[in-house]
Image: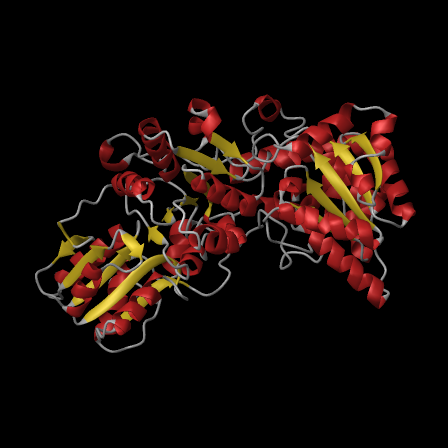
Length: 603
């Protein structure tokens, strides 16, 4: 592919120097570049195809190199911004270890101000940054580019409330494509739709003007010249202004525009298909297993309802919504509201299943604690993308939920090790009426079934060598690696028992009894070690005067970068050889280390 204009750009300055008549050609080159690179590397394609002209206009009006701040909410719509700020070469390594992040990254570029990809935050950043510049006398405009889907989040309205009253010159660009992952929901979506089709009187007074903002729009988000003119007028006002740009998600790429479900919101990397396990059919994803299991339960129990925060497809609730539309609720990007709304549903005699990504539940921790658990309400939370997610990076790794949820009285947490256990544990969760329940599972293909050798008071024994030396406690799908490690250790004459407690929170009595009969306990989890499930077990053993030493393996207390899931787990010491190596070091009284011998053997 040749891209003469892209190749000649030397950063945002080059964009500003480009004659306006060449912008359509540049926009076409950018779209071709994105389609070529993102369909190979994987990533967010549709959102970025939709903001090409908008991003060009922003960089022509505002000088990001001279202190003007461009804040993107959410960050997955910043690929064009990356292209225009000198990172074109990095797209060959997009979302790969050591390569370009799929979101803005402060470590990558000084043009990136915020790097978390949690929605509805940019307006609050903008409010604080504008206040700081006002107090210190620093120059530079503050611009927040916010998707209409992100405006369904409560935090965005907390910020709008302050921005409108503050009078500081913040420009809010509403990228209105009618969608987040799914169509934007609620009264706001209806209001924006009215603005798109209303007359002059409607545009002169709307929710934004009533909150103290100037308002320009709606403007064609694919007309760079019109956008540029509106943005210049907005900057000249020197007050809070909303610029309402109407765009098309996936613009300029036929398959994306025709994809009515998500407009190719994200595409998977173009990699060779993996050989199905054991020569049979390919295993389903964890999400698909959950989706089918919930449908079955909902058919049996009319009180089961489902809630999601703008992601019915990615969380597996789309089939539920199709089959039980009156029992399904998409609340938009509003996790806090989702949780407390679920509390109200439970108070009304229903059993809500709230399906969100693990990384997003932390946004609603207070609601889980005070609005659900305090009232001992039967709400089930299903956390997709728990643990290491891979290419989406530190803001999407579901590392924190297990440690946070372990603090909540009366909450039961389970980490299924395989598809069969996911189905069984979901059934148990929906039947539980004494308080909240949580199931967490990773992104990707469900682990192969790993039957128990036997069960003992709520604990599944997965491997037993006959000698009660080391108790290896596995939480979730890392059970396969634990069993492999135990088999290798048994060949060396070391007795290992591998167990899956099924419900890890609270600690079941059977696990305490097993720990008391072994010389050493080592726990393995795909969540942070700090305050995690291993720590909870160690504390419970101390509380019950069980003095067996406990060592924990898990993710570090750090923001883990993007990369392949297997590689990142190995870096955290969670492969089978590393688990075996940790057992040997623990038995020898040596500190645990994540270093594995070069030949891959456990010693």
